Length: 520
Image (cartoon, rainbow, N blue to C red; front, side):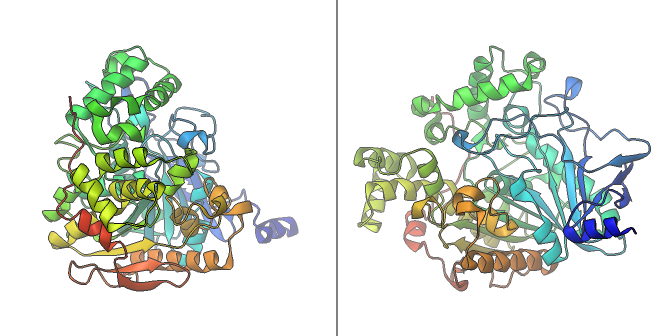
């Protein structure tokens, strides 16, 4: 090794004479970066274009020679970001959207390290595995684990229910990525029998779906679901939304009718409908004000039942599960929407009656349980509970009912950014877990991208818990049961105690998270 090569490695600069790994489709060359071998942009499926558009993923095309795995693959077609505030994804270089990325301490086939596969969120309409906030170097290095991220189709490409196309194509992409992991990860130093999926928001909803999907059985042993959304669509609702989406693009809601439409035109149509959805509450119910026309569809085939129904019947009893949520999930959306200080009592009343169990009865229950809450606090609280908190807790309860084991956490440590208004908001767990404080939404949550000492301690605790769970099935705190209701509380000093949101839990007791229906 020359002096310049040695200095480059010590400084963290890439080593272009990196390791070579042979996958089932061909050899790939990665980079050595800061003590890790990193491989980016490896195809796990053929590009879903042409005859393959809106269809289930197909095997990747083999290649000759050694493919450079230096750059992330292009993101799938998508909108610019949450309410226009998230970073614009890089412009697609090609149509090879379905790729994986691997961080490994050493691509030694005999190492058999635990494997952690990240599934990104983004309201099922945006996101990609190459986002800076998902740089997995800290997790791989500190946890001595192999970490995988990947792309899956989102929005109209992945989740709209077209005639002539399978439902839940984005979930089928995830299954194909996990099949790639099973077939290839040993060559990167990972153990295909010790795979943990972990993800946040729509990624957690995807994981909940995978736990319920027959096609995904046997592809992972453990799961971490961070902020599971409760929105799953009935087939009737999904078809009606698909018809409205297609109409925005000036086409019929069929795979054949939309296959020739530029994907960018479809993302524009999806964004246009999202901006109008709130007008259709009488037709689309609770989904309408979310402005998100995409979610997993309970179609009876790809996803036979909701995750809560499936887990309660024992579908995932052999899967070790960690599930949790953040205390103030909805505050992020409140701030991004510019609603801080603008929520009237009339708006709070309408929101409580739309989302709380029992409508007007639910509104009274919230006002009685939280008598000191302002209109804004009630507005945010009921949407936190409906969208993330109670679906997450109920997933753990369903796992317990079905004979499995689940460990529950709640993140209560408040973000230092947002002038103190964000609290323990949605997505705060991502920069804490990955240690990427200045990337993506982390730049909003951590001013200047600089973590406080408390954040760094909590970040280290979370990575240790998550990677220990991936290795052993035990994150370091007791499993959840309906009697003691013990959870891990993630704060300045992490502690174990009773579930903190007991008042909300009691309001939602007996409520079933069923597929969202078409109302009229």
